[in-house]
Image (cartoon, rainbow, N blue to C red; front, side, top):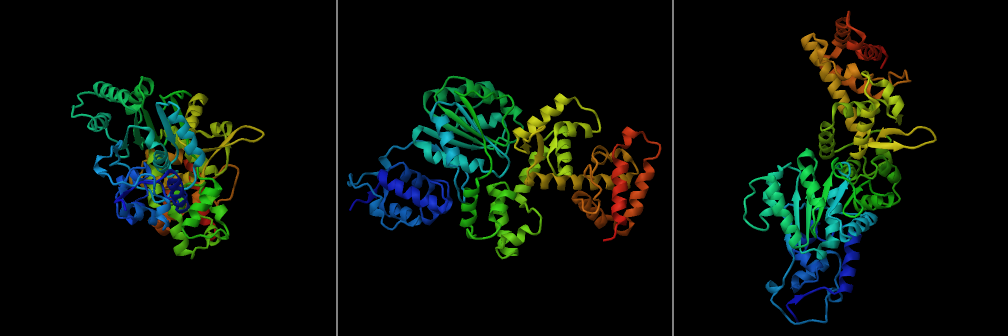
Length: 497
């Protein structure tokens, strides 16, 4: 028997179905090559139809539950060859992460593959944190890596300078030192012209302006390669061109795909509340993966009992991602999110405009809304009247917590300094939802009151009353919503319970 084997076309199709049932990617699920006691590189060679050692071939099949490995092997060529002599595409995957599982996304995969194999020079996957951009990029490469001579993956999550990125990329080709960005870009383009490269830039979420000119140039100049970019937002300076530049705005998993993910984590299809859980988290795969251990641990896997708490749990990992994205917004964009968090319901543009304390040019507000929508932070509601906007629940939770924390910090600073200049959010935003007098049931007021009570205890009412004293003789513009907010907090404190 030969000491090396390769998979047949039919065999690869059988293995493909087996790994799909497990929710594994072809080459990015670490458990696969770990269970087979091999490496990611060897697993990639298996999928390329290259020969690998027989015992590893068998282990790869067994890892996905296939015991009849003979049905997978190509029996047409049984002679042994020196595996080291087999040419393989150049791969630089050192910065590519592993993924635990991957479900669905068949439509997105087909669309991305069509764009890339159809000659696009730049393809972008954009979407909110945790939505699965990186996992989708890894799954896509499983499908199309054989169509390229070389693949290079670079992670931009640490926000390297463009000069450092170019230096890192060019190290794959030669040892030339990048003296400046124009020279480095020209050198990279030269290589992209010589061979068909797939260059993956994952996580361009920092200051996009530093990369705009670079991305524009590599998307416009003549070459035979493709750059796949993942980001939380589409770079402003990049214009979509149906021939060379395309952008996929990634949404949450479909109900069917999300249910498959939940079932893989121990929930049965008969479990009550699974569909509601998917809707609550808008099919965000990371959010669902983070909340399921809590449901299993605290509620013994009872999804309905968790939903009955009427709360949203966000893991620390996803909270950090969303908070970082929030902190990168302009002041006006943050103000808009605060108002939408206060309303907790879809709000029209005209209604939003009337509540801004300082009059802002409507065109500027519209630009801010477009920017927020481009970052997947808004949900758009189209009814019979004017289009309205709201926050999806994950964003609503993070923005609400941020609003309460900043409001509490402002109060503490004013108390310490007796200076009302520290009032910012409490001056520009009325915390009680417009059109309601439900002070006791208002979520934001309730959170803020509890936060302040932990700091000031029984002295909180007197503390708030001293703040009202600071507002005397101040102009209406200087006061803004401060007096309303302090008064409503006092009124809530006097409510029983």
